[in-house]
Amino acid sequence: MPLTALYQKLLNLSRYLEGLAPLALRIYLAPVLLQAGYNKLSHFEDTVAWFANPDWGLGLPMPALMATLAAGTEFFWGHLITAWAGD
Image (cartoon, rainbow, N blue to C red; front, side):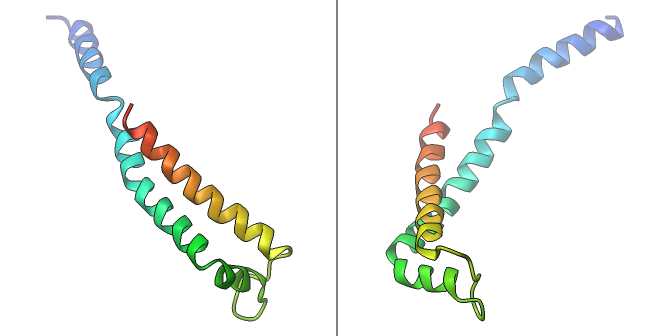
């Protein structure tokens, strides 16, 4: 068997495994994002205070909007990644 044919055969076999890395990443990231978003949503006032305070927090402008965007994005994308992991 020539070397090019062996190489082509290995490439064809590797195509079956190409979806495993993205699937593993989705399975790993989904619970992290869901938990972070849920914590921000369930303790929303504390999250806004942390986003607003320049001494012990982040000192961001418009902290309520920023906290809403952060919590919603994490929670929404955690659910979306979970749905995509099933494909």
